[in-house]
Amino acid sequence: MSTNDSPEISAASRHVAAANADNADLKALIRTIPDFPKPGIQFRDVTTLLLDRCGFSSCVGRMAAAAPGPVDLVAGVEARGFLFAGALADRLNAGVLLIRKDGKLPGATIAEDYALEYGQDRIAMHADACAPDARVLLVDDLIATGGTARAAVRLLRKAGARVVQAQFLVDLPELGGADALRKDGVDVHALVAFEGH
Ligand SMILES: O=P(O)(O)OC[C@H]1O[C@H](OP(=O)(O)OP(=O)(O)O)[C@H](O)[C@@H]1O
Ligand SMILES: Nc1ncnc2[nH]cnc12
Image (tube, rainbow, N blue to C red; front, side, top):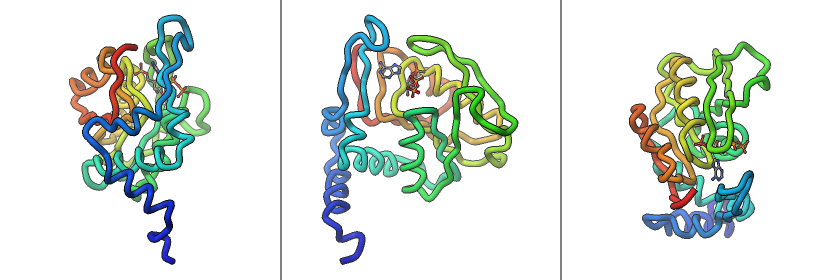
């Protein structure tokens, strides 16, 4: 039996094919934890989707299907974004570019400050991580205020990259991040949306 005939891969492929407009099957795998990490935040917990073999595979397959042609690199934001970046880069035959919380990368870095829905942070990447005009797809598990993704796009552009798309499993549209990122000139694609914070 060839690898493509394996029952697990066939099941995952069927899930990719079964994608509907709002990806309700994926949405159902994401758990909501109220009041985490602080009162008033509805935390959209993707760990439950990650635990599901077909759910994660379908998610990455649908992300790959939405990619705008070949890309050189998939950039992922620490920490949850790394999971999607690694799997997506493998599907797209691209390299993986790590955008980390500041202070973790060993080489010369460039960094950007940003505001979160529930705090303040700073991300960094290696200054020499991408060639000029490299086609980079940015991916993260979720976009809320857009602070993280917008800082990541500023960083990538500072490094000379062309950010050809930003993809997210989850969009929280009421927080305006995806719209702000579009105004920054980025093609934004998200698989599911949750109303409410
Ligand atoms: O659109 P924003 O308002 O910037 O929020 C989205 C970011 O918040 C979460 O990461 P978090 O900083 O909590 O880090 P983690 O992945 O390490 O948990 C999420 O994974 C995004 O990166
Ligand atoms: N509401 C939320 N749920 C999960 N991750 C988040 N990151 C920022 N806001 C979030």
